[in-house]
Amino acid sequence: MVHGAEWTTKELFTYPNEYIYWTIQIVMYPLMTGFVAGAFVLSSLYHVFGQKDIKDLAKFSLVFSFALLIVAPMPLLFHLQQPQRNTEVFFTPHFTSAIAAFGMVYLIYMMIVAAEVWFVYRKHFVEQAIALIGKGGLINFVNRLIFNLLTLGAYDIGEQAVHKDEKLIKVLAGIGIPVAFFLHGYAGFIFGSVKANALWTTPLMPIIFIMSAVVSGVALCMVTYIVIMEWKKFRAKKKHEDQVSVEIKGAEVDVIRKTSKYLIAAMIAAMTLEMLDLVFRGYTAMKSWDILRSVIYGKDFFNIFVLQYLCGNLIPFILLLIPGLTIRRAVIATLLVLLGVFMMRWNVVIGGQAFSNSYAGYMHYSMPIIPHNLEAFKEGAAGALVIAILPFVFFWFFNKFAPSLKFKRDNNE
Image (cartoon, rainbow, N blue to C red; front, side, top):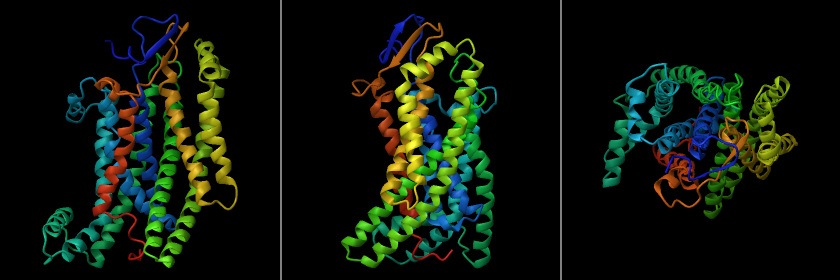
Protein backbone atom coordinates (compact mmCIF):
# COMPACT_ATOMS: atom_id res chain seq x y z
CA MET A 1 0.00 0.00 0.00
CA VAL A 2 1.23 3.51 -0.79
CA HIS A 3 2.50 5.42 2.24
CA GLY A 4 -0.33 7.64 3.41
CA ALA A 5 -3.17 5.80 1.69
CA GLU A 6 -4.20 4.08 4.93
CA TRP A 7 -5.11 7.26 6.80
CA THR A 8 -6.00 9.65 3.96
CA THR A 9 -9.52 10.30 2.74
CA LYS A 10 -10.06 12.50 -0.30
CA GLU A 11 -12.80 14.91 -1.29
CA LEU A 12 -13.54 16.49 -4.69
CA PHE A 13 -10.68 16.69 -7.21
CA THR A 14 -7.26 15.59 -5.97
CA TYR A 15 -4.29 14.17 -7.83
CA PRO A 16 -3.87 10.36 -7.69
CA ASN A 17 -0.45 10.58 -6.01
CA GLU A 18 -1.54 13.02 -3.30
CA TYR A 19 -1.84 11.75 0.26
CA ILE A 20 -1.28 13.01 3.80
CA TYR A 21 2.37 12.01 3.95
CA TRP A 22 3.38 13.99 7.04
CA THR A 23 1.46 12.61 10.01
CA ILE A 24 1.31 12.98 13.78
CA GLN A 25 5.05 12.29 14.07
CA ILE A 26 5.82 15.40 12.01
CA VAL A 27 3.52 17.27 14.39
CA MET A 28 5.48 15.85 17.33
CA TYR A 29 8.85 16.76 15.83
CA PRO A 30 8.56 20.59 15.96
CA LEU A 31 6.65 20.22 19.22
CA MET A 32 9.58 18.39 20.85
CA THR A 33 12.27 20.70 19.45
CA GLY A 34 10.16 23.61 20.67
CA PHE A 35 10.08 22.16 24.18
CA VAL A 36 13.87 21.80 24.07
CA ALA A 37 14.45 25.39 23.00
CA GLY A 38 11.94 26.83 25.45
CA ALA A 39 13.26 24.84 28.41
CA PHE A 40 16.84 25.86 27.62
CA VAL A 41 15.91 29.53 27.30
CA LEU A 42 14.16 29.33 30.67
CA SER A 43 17.27 27.84 32.28
CA SER A 44 19.40 30.56 30.68
CA LEU A 45 17.37 33.28 32.38
CA TYR A 46 19.17 32.28 35.57
CA HIS A 47 22.56 31.19 34.23
CA VAL A 48 23.05 34.10 31.81
CA PHE A 49 20.79 36.90 33.01
CA GLY A 50 21.05 36.17 36.73
CA GLN A 51 17.31 35.83 37.41
CA LYS A 52 17.82 34.19 40.81
CA ASP A 53 14.11 34.24 41.63
CA ILE A 54 13.59 31.28 39.28
CA LYS A 55 16.83 29.46 40.18
CA ASP A 56 15.19 26.18 41.19
CA LEU A 57 13.03 26.03 38.09
CA ALA A 58 15.98 27.02 35.87
CA LYS A 59 18.15 24.14 37.15
CA PHE A 60 15.31 21.72 36.60
CA SER A 61 14.74 23.14 33.11
CA LEU A 62 18.35 22.56 32.10
CA VAL A 63 18.26 18.83 32.94
CA PHE A 64 14.77 18.52 31.48
CA SER A 65 15.89 20.18 28.25
CA PHE A 66 18.68 17.59 27.97
CA ALA A 67 16.11 14.78 28.32
CA LEU A 68 13.89 16.46 25.74
CA LEU A 69 16.82 16.94 23.39
CA ILE A 70 17.51 13.20 23.23
CA VAL A 71 13.91 12.56 22.21
CA ALA A 72 13.62 15.50 19.77
CA PRO A 73 14.77 13.65 16.61
CA MET A 74 12.92 10.41 17.44
CA PRO A 75 9.66 11.42 15.70
CA LEU A 76 11.66 11.62 12.48
CA LEU A 77 13.01 8.11 13.07
CA PHE A 78 9.48 6.85 13.58
CA HIS A 79 8.38 8.55 10.38
CA LEU A 80 11.26 7.51 8.14
CA GLN A 81 10.79 4.56 5.82
CA GLN A 82 14.54 3.79 6.10
CA PRO A 83 15.45 4.91 9.65
CA GLN A 84 18.70 2.89 9.59
CA ARG A 85 20.13 5.60 7.35
CA ASN A 86 19.78 8.32 10.01
CA THR A 87 23.49 8.28 10.89
CA GLU A 88 24.32 9.57 7.41
CA VAL A 89 22.97 12.95 8.49
CA PHE A 90 25.72 13.16 11.10
CA PHE A 91 28.56 11.58 9.12
CA THR A 92 28.00 13.47 5.86
CA PRO A 93 27.43 17.07 6.97
CA HIS A 94 26.62 19.68 4.35
CA PHE A 95 24.30 22.65 3.84
CA THR A 96 22.65 21.59 0.57
CA SER A 97 20.06 19.65 2.55
CA ALA A 98 18.01 21.24 5.32
CA ILE A 99 17.85 17.98 7.26
CA ALA A 100 21.65 17.52 6.97
CA ALA A 101 22.09 21.03 8.37
CA PHE A 102 19.81 20.00 11.21
CA GLY A 103 22.21 17.15 12.01
CA MET A 104 25.05 19.60 12.51
CA VAL A 105 23.01 22.05 14.57
CA TYR A 106 21.61 19.23 16.66
CA LEU A 107 25.06 17.81 17.40
CA ILE A 108 26.47 21.22 18.35
CA TYR A 109 23.50 21.95 20.56
CA MET A 110 23.72 18.52 22.18
CA MET A 111 27.39 19.12 23.04
CA ILE A 112 26.61 22.56 24.49
CA VAL A 113 23.76 21.32 26.69
CA ALA A 114 25.70 18.21 27.81
CA ALA A 115 28.74 20.34 28.69
CA GLU A 116 26.60 22.83 30.61
CA VAL A 117 24.88 20.08 32.58
CA TRP A 118 28.28 18.57 33.36
CA PHE A 119 29.73 21.86 34.64
CA VAL A 120 26.62 22.55 36.73
CA TYR A 121 26.79 19.12 38.40
CA ARG A 122 30.54 18.39 38.37
CA LYS A 123 30.90 19.34 42.03
CA HIS A 124 27.99 17.07 42.92
CA PHE A 125 29.53 14.18 40.95
CA VAL A 126 32.84 14.55 42.81
CA GLU A 127 31.15 14.82 46.21
CA GLN A 128 29.10 11.71 45.57
CA ALA A 129 32.10 9.77 44.29
CA ILE A 130 34.05 10.67 47.44
CA ALA A 131 31.09 9.97 49.75
CA LEU A 132 30.68 6.45 48.36
CA ILE A 133 34.30 5.46 49.02
CA GLY A 134 34.44 2.63 51.52
CA LYS A 135 30.74 1.81 51.35
CA GLY A 136 29.97 -1.82 50.66
CA GLY A 137 27.28 -3.40 48.52
CA LEU A 138 26.78 -3.85 44.82
CA ILE A 139 24.55 -0.76 44.38
CA ASN A 140 27.10 1.51 46.10
CA PHE A 141 29.86 0.01 43.96
CA VAL A 142 27.92 0.65 40.73
CA ASN A 143 26.98 4.17 41.83
CA ARG A 144 30.59 4.94 42.79
CA LEU A 145 31.73 3.70 39.39
CA ILE A 146 29.13 5.84 37.58
CA PHE A 147 29.91 8.98 39.58
CA ASN A 148 33.64 8.47 39.02
CA LEU A 149 33.00 8.21 35.29
CA LEU A 150 30.84 11.33 35.38
CA THR A 151 33.65 13.36 36.96
CA LEU A 152 35.79 12.66 33.86
CA GLY A 153 38.80 12.70 36.18
CA ALA A 154 38.26 16.34 37.26
CA TYR A 155 38.18 16.00 41.05
CA ASP A 156 39.19 19.55 41.96
CA ILE A 157 36.22 21.17 43.71
CA GLY A 158 38.17 23.96 45.32
CA GLU A 159 36.83 27.50 45.32
CA GLN A 160 38.80 28.57 42.25
CA ALA A 161 37.84 25.48 40.24
CA VAL A 162 34.13 25.90 41.05
CA HIS A 163 34.36 29.59 40.15
CA LYS A 164 35.82 28.63 36.76
CA ASP A 165 32.95 26.18 36.30
CA GLU A 166 30.44 28.95 36.94
CA LYS A 167 32.10 31.17 34.34
CA LEU A 168 32.02 28.40 31.77
CA ILE A 169 28.36 27.67 32.55
CA LYS A 170 27.53 31.28 31.79
CA VAL A 171 29.48 31.18 28.52
CA LEU A 172 27.88 27.92 27.41
CA ALA A 173 24.39 29.14 28.30
CA GLY A 174 25.03 32.35 26.37
CA ILE A 175 26.19 30.42 23.29
CA GLY A 176 23.34 27.95 23.69
CA ILE A 177 20.55 30.55 23.39
CA PRO A 178 21.11 31.42 19.69
CA VAL A 179 21.81 27.76 18.89
CA ALA A 180 18.54 26.76 20.58
CA PHE A 181 16.69 29.40 18.58
CA PHE A 182 18.40 28.21 15.42
CA LEU A 183 17.52 24.58 16.15
CA HIS A 184 13.84 25.36 16.35
CA GLY A 185 13.86 28.16 13.81
CA TYR A 186 15.22 25.58 11.41
CA ALA A 187 12.04 23.50 11.87
CA GLY A 188 10.05 26.54 10.82
CA PHE A 189 12.53 27.13 8.02
CA ILE A 190 11.83 23.68 6.57
CA PHE A 191 8.11 24.41 6.39
CA GLY A 192 8.57 28.00 5.22
CA SER A 193 10.89 26.96 2.39
CA VAL A 194 8.38 24.52 0.83
CA LYS A 195 7.23 26.82 -1.96
CA ALA A 196 4.79 24.24 -3.33
CA ASN A 197 2.62 24.52 -0.21
CA ALA A 198 0.55 27.69 0.04
CA LEU A 199 0.07 27.50 3.81
CA TRP A 200 3.72 26.89 4.72
CA THR A 201 5.55 29.24 2.40
CA THR A 202 5.96 32.41 4.45
CA PRO A 203 9.13 34.10 5.78
CA LEU A 204 7.40 34.52 9.13
CA MET A 205 7.26 30.76 9.71
CA PRO A 206 10.70 30.39 11.45
CA ILE A 207 10.01 33.36 13.74
CA ILE A 208 6.53 32.08 14.61
CA PHE A 209 8.03 28.68 15.45
CA ILE A 210 10.72 30.23 17.65
CA MET A 211 8.27 32.28 19.72
CA SER A 212 5.83 29.41 20.11
CA ALA A 213 8.81 27.24 21.14
CA VAL A 214 9.57 29.55 24.04
CA VAL A 215 5.88 29.50 25.03
CA SER A 216 5.63 25.71 24.90
CA GLY A 217 8.94 25.07 26.68
CA VAL A 218 8.19 27.45 29.55
CA ALA A 219 4.65 26.08 29.93
CA LEU A 220 5.85 22.45 29.95
CA CYS A 221 8.56 23.19 32.52
CA MET A 222 6.03 25.01 34.72
CA VAL A 223 3.45 22.23 34.73
CA THR A 224 6.09 19.50 35.19
CA TYR A 225 7.70 21.48 38.02
CA ILE A 226 4.30 21.83 39.69
CA VAL A 227 3.62 18.09 39.44
CA ILE A 228 7.01 17.26 40.98
CA MET A 229 6.62 19.78 43.79
CA GLU A 230 3.10 18.58 44.52
CA TRP A 231 4.50 15.05 44.80
CA LYS A 232 7.16 16.31 47.20
CA LYS A 233 4.47 17.99 49.29
CA PHE A 234 2.44 14.80 49.34
CA ARG A 235 5.44 12.79 50.53
CA ALA A 236 6.27 15.38 53.19
CA LYS A 237 2.70 15.27 54.50
CA LYS A 238 2.78 11.49 54.53
CA LYS A 239 5.88 11.64 56.73
CA HIS A 240 4.14 14.25 58.94
CA GLU A 241 6.74 16.88 57.98
CA ASP A 242 4.21 19.70 57.96
CA GLN A 243 6.82 22.48 58.08
CA VAL A 244 8.63 21.08 55.03
CA SER A 245 5.32 20.84 53.17
CA VAL A 246 4.54 24.50 53.91
CA GLU A 247 8.03 25.56 52.76
CA ILE A 248 7.68 23.65 49.49
CA LYS A 249 4.24 25.16 48.87
CA GLY A 250 5.50 28.71 49.46
CA ALA A 251 8.50 28.25 47.17
CA GLU A 252 6.36 26.61 44.49
CA VAL A 253 3.81 29.45 44.36
CA ASP A 254 6.55 32.08 44.34
CA VAL A 255 8.48 30.48 41.46
CA ILE A 256 5.37 29.84 39.37
CA ARG A 257 4.10 33.41 39.74
CA LYS A 258 7.44 34.84 38.67
CA THR A 259 7.83 32.43 35.76
CA SER A 260 4.29 33.15 34.55
CA LYS A 261 5.41 36.72 33.74
CA TYR A 262 7.94 35.37 31.24
CA LEU A 263 5.27 33.06 29.83
CA ILE A 264 2.85 35.97 29.36
CA ALA A 265 5.52 38.01 27.54
CA ALA A 266 6.32 35.11 25.21
CA MET A 267 2.60 34.52 24.57
CA ILE A 268 2.07 38.14 23.55
CA ALA A 269 4.91 37.91 21.02
CA ALA A 270 3.73 34.54 19.67
CA MET A 271 0.08 35.57 19.32
CA THR A 272 1.05 38.85 17.65
CA LEU A 273 3.14 37.05 15.04
CA GLU A 274 0.43 34.48 14.31
CA MET A 275 -2.20 37.18 13.88
CA LEU A 276 0.17 39.17 11.67
CA ASP A 277 0.68 36.14 9.45
CA LEU A 278 -3.06 35.54 9.16
CA VAL A 279 -3.76 39.19 8.27
CA PHE A 280 -0.87 39.24 5.79
CA ARG A 281 -2.24 36.21 3.93
CA GLY A 282 -5.70 37.74 3.70
CA TYR A 283 -4.37 41.13 2.59
CA THR A 284 -2.07 39.78 -0.14
CA ALA A 285 -4.77 37.27 -1.26
CA MET A 286 -2.52 35.26 -3.54
CA LYS A 287 -3.82 32.72 -6.06
CA SER A 288 -4.10 30.03 -3.42
CA TRP A 289 -6.01 32.25 -0.98
CA ASP A 290 -9.45 30.98 -2.01
CA ILE A 291 -8.74 27.40 -1.00
CA LEU A 292 -6.67 28.49 1.99
CA ARG A 293 -9.60 30.59 3.19
CA SER A 294 -11.97 27.65 2.78
CA VAL A 295 -9.67 25.56 5.00
CA ILE A 296 -8.89 28.23 7.61
CA TYR A 297 -12.40 29.68 7.96
CA GLY A 298 -14.30 26.52 7.03
CA LYS A 299 -13.00 23.00 7.41
CA ASP A 300 -10.39 23.75 10.12
CA PHE A 301 -12.28 26.59 11.82
CA PHE A 302 -12.80 24.61 15.05
CA ASN A 303 -9.15 23.50 15.21
CA ILE A 304 -7.74 26.94 14.48
CA PHE A 305 -10.08 29.46 16.10
CA VAL A 306 -11.62 27.41 18.92
CA LEU A 307 -8.89 24.99 20.04
CA GLN A 308 -5.78 26.96 19.09
CA TYR A 309 -6.68 30.63 19.51
CA LEU A 310 -9.55 30.56 22.04
CA CYS A 311 -8.68 27.56 24.27
CA GLY A 312 -4.92 27.59 23.70
CA ASN A 313 -4.19 31.31 23.66
CA LEU A 314 -6.92 33.66 24.86
CA ILE A 315 -8.30 31.74 27.87
CA PRO A 316 -4.88 30.84 29.40
CA PHE A 317 -3.68 34.39 28.71
CA ILE A 318 -6.59 35.78 30.76
CA LEU A 319 -6.10 33.15 33.49
CA LEU A 320 -2.45 34.13 33.85
CA LEU A 321 -3.21 37.85 33.85
CA ILE A 322 -5.75 37.72 36.70
CA PRO A 323 -3.95 38.81 39.90
CA GLY A 324 -3.23 36.26 42.64
CA LEU A 325 -2.24 33.35 40.45
CA THR A 326 -2.85 30.05 42.23
CA ILE A 327 -1.24 26.69 41.50
CA ARG A 328 -4.54 25.24 40.31
CA ARG A 329 -5.09 28.15 37.91
CA ALA A 330 -1.49 27.92 36.71
CA VAL A 331 -1.94 24.20 35.94
CA ILE A 332 -5.12 24.86 33.94
CA ALA A 333 -3.49 27.75 32.08
CA THR A 334 -0.28 25.91 31.20
CA LEU A 335 -2.16 22.80 30.05
CA LEU A 336 -4.30 24.99 27.81
CA VAL A 337 -1.15 26.70 26.50
CA LEU A 338 0.30 23.28 25.63
CA LEU A 339 -2.96 22.41 23.88
CA GLY A 340 -2.73 25.63 21.91
CA VAL A 341 0.88 25.00 20.84
CA PHE A 342 0.07 21.41 19.88
CA MET A 343 -2.89 22.60 17.80
CA MET A 344 -0.70 25.23 16.16
CA ARG A 345 1.71 22.48 15.08
CA TRP A 346 -1.21 20.27 14.03
CA ASN A 347 -2.85 23.03 12.00
CA VAL A 348 0.44 23.83 10.27
CA VAL A 349 1.48 20.24 9.48
CA ILE A 350 -1.87 18.53 8.89
CA GLY A 351 -3.74 21.68 7.81
CA GLY A 352 -1.02 22.40 5.27
CA GLN A 353 -1.79 19.09 3.59
CA ALA A 354 -5.58 19.41 3.85
CA PHE A 355 -5.97 20.82 0.36
CA SER A 356 -4.92 19.47 -3.01
CA ASN A 357 -2.36 21.17 -5.23
CA SER A 358 -5.15 21.26 -7.77
CA TYR A 359 -6.78 23.86 -5.48
CA ALA A 360 -10.04 22.00 -6.16
CA GLY A 361 -10.04 19.21 -3.59
CA TYR A 362 -9.38 18.34 0.03
CA MET A 363 -7.69 15.58 2.00
CA HIS A 364 -8.36 14.47 5.57
CA TYR A 365 -6.03 12.74 8.02
CA SER A 366 -7.64 9.97 10.08
CA MET A 367 -5.00 9.29 12.71
CA PRO A 368 -4.61 5.54 13.38
CA ILE A 369 -5.66 4.89 16.97
CA ILE A 370 -5.30 1.11 17.13
CA PRO A 371 -1.78 -0.04 16.12
CA HIS A 372 -2.88 -3.00 14.00
CA ASN A 373 0.42 -2.97 12.10
CA LEU A 374 3.86 -1.34 12.37
CA GLU A 375 2.94 1.54 10.08
CA ALA A 376 -0.20 2.34 12.08
CA PHE A 377 1.83 2.21 15.29
CA LYS A 378 4.58 4.53 14.07
CA GLU A 379 2.31 7.08 12.39
CA GLY A 380 -0.57 6.87 14.85
CA ALA A 381 -1.58 7.74 18.39
CA ALA A 382 0.50 4.94 19.97
CA GLY A 383 3.75 6.18 18.42
CA ALA A 384 3.00 9.76 19.43
CA LEU A 385 2.26 8.62 22.99
CA VAL A 386 5.65 6.87 23.16
CA ILE A 387 7.36 10.07 22.04
CA ALA A 388 5.42 12.11 24.60
CA ILE A 389 6.34 9.79 27.50
CA LEU A 390 10.02 9.21 26.73
CA PRO A 391 11.34 12.65 27.90
CA PHE A 392 9.91 12.04 31.36
CA VAL A 393 11.52 8.59 31.51
CA PHE A 394 14.90 10.05 30.54
CA PHE A 395 14.48 12.91 32.99
CA TRP A 396 13.67 10.47 35.79
CA PHE A 397 16.88 8.56 35.00
CA PHE A 398 19.07 11.68 34.70
CA ASN A 399 17.63 13.06 37.90
CA LYS A 400 19.06 10.06 39.76
CA PHE A 401 22.56 11.38 39.09
CA ALA A 402 21.90 15.09 38.52
CA PRO A 403 19.18 15.90 41.08
CA SER A 404 17.81 19.07 39.60
CA LEU A 405 15.21 19.70 42.30
CA LYS A 406 17.14 18.54 45.32
CA PHE A 407 19.43 21.51 45.80
CA LYS A 408 17.06 23.84 47.57
CA ARG A 409 17.79 22.82 51.12
CA ASP A 410 21.53 22.16 50.87
CA ASN A 411 22.80 24.56 48.22
CA ASN A 412 23.56 28.15 49.03
CA GLU A 413 24.23 29.37 45.51
